[in-house]
Length: 457
Image (cartoon, rainbow, N blue to C red; front, side):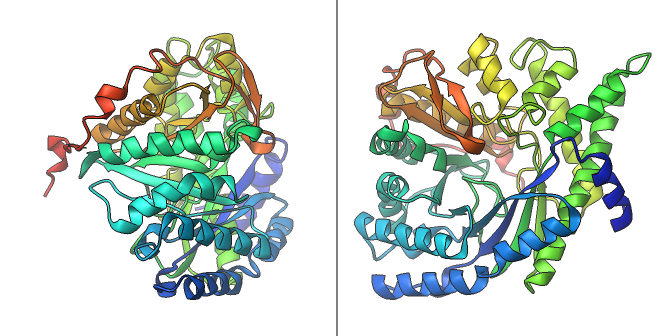
């Protein structure tokens, strides 16, 4: 393992390569806030978040200044709100979302995740109420994020939940039409959601986790690209196996950075340290793009022939390097390919190298899935559900986490551009074929059974 001094030296070498700690996330259980009285529930939630998170931002800033590494976002992830929702209507749960938003503002964090449900096998009363509340809750709050797990390799795909989520995505986009459907950027539909992920919009605190815990998400696509560029400048050029080793060593160093910062924040707050999630989470700027890594390997753009094989290599090498660096790697820890948030991926989509179909193929070997994908505003709810179902199937069959964060942009068509600003970036709206033709398929409902290899006992 690297010592603190060696990590500091590594950081000095990498200071111009866009290395940052993308997120330090406080996971917080709300199970002791349970109440069938809305006012009492709201008061207990507000009190618990403010007590536990009052020093989070200050401590993160102090640790970031000490090491000279920016902590881009400070976040909170709470228990799935649906477990608190049984006694309440959708309108009442919108009020709960506003309490969560108020708490986020008071403690100064950027986002709060956990306004979600786990419905891979069926619904409790609170699950349905919460899903119905999502469009209004996300469109009327600034920092609250929602994730709904509708599938797992153990249980199959809840197609009734998939149908509901297509409706929810469409309604969320329409309620934020003045912002080009921006509220959908805070809504993710998952298969095999991890319980300890620090990245939004999917973060929540799973069952079996501590009452309060610090999880860290580290980003490093720029660091990886520079390491590959240095290796490729040598003669003779390295092989794929040698380049995999380069990525592994780089991921090792970056993971150690995240763990050191995360453990120091946790110790300062007298909380346990959970996991470090080494995901190559890009930003919409030159030098911090997963898509640009493909150029370093000699491909014209992500989406060109060879892209799936290269992404598989990249994702695997990142996981291997991170696993060697820490016994507490968790979350997703791989390569993200969010279309609008990555300059290289967005450019590939605009130039025609990356279609929706090719993007879906890439998600079979990366972390997450159809992420920050802008679609025509007239895409039907059933077609949105069908796209979600396809992505869930990839996760279920491959025993991996997949997700869909889709944005049907009201009033806009394929080929038009949309800009969301900040880390969310900008994108070209992707074409959806047969975008009105999935209603009969989705109306079948029920549950797609789990694959035979789920029987592992």
